[in-house]
Amino acid sequence: MSERKTKKGKTAVYPGTFDPITNGHISLVERACALFDNVIVAVVGNESKSPLFTQEERYHLVKTSLGNIKKVRVIKFHGLLANLVKDYKACAIIRGLRAISDFEYEFQMALMNRKLVRDVETVFLMPSLSWVYLSSTIVKDVAANKGDIKSLVPSPVAEALRIKFSGAKGKKR
Image (cartoon, rainbow, N blue to C red):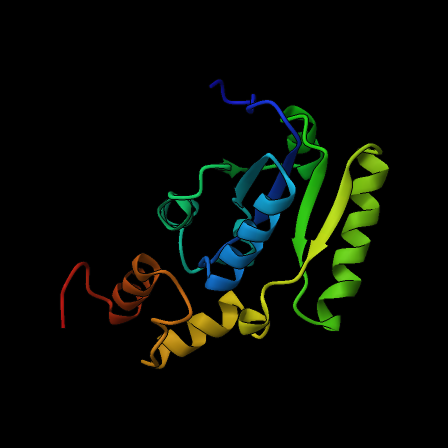
């Protein structure tokens, strides 16, 4: 499969920083897979956000975490989302909403994307109720303070956070 082609069917793009990917993100991917034939998870290289993990690390963690979902393709992405959506001939952009506080920003982005790519819809999805409170920021805060995150993220992510916050490369406690 070439870099910019997907399998036949309706394709959606789910962009995000995924710093790191959480079980809430995975819940959204699973919901998107129920609606679309192909879901492209685009790991954004937005270094202005000062992510804890590099784009390469985030890409690897997302790919590892979603590897068993057949409809999903994980890519690295820099640039304008509207261009990516056009390149992959996607019909939708997936965005997650956890609370009303997410809506205003996401609504503005959806309107801008509609202006740039008129024939692409933004689909807002909520994670399952068990993950509605969860964010990457919360996970990083809990991990940084030595809290138990094993039920919040896939095991490779929990291990990567443990290593990142212990300052050790690959040491086991």
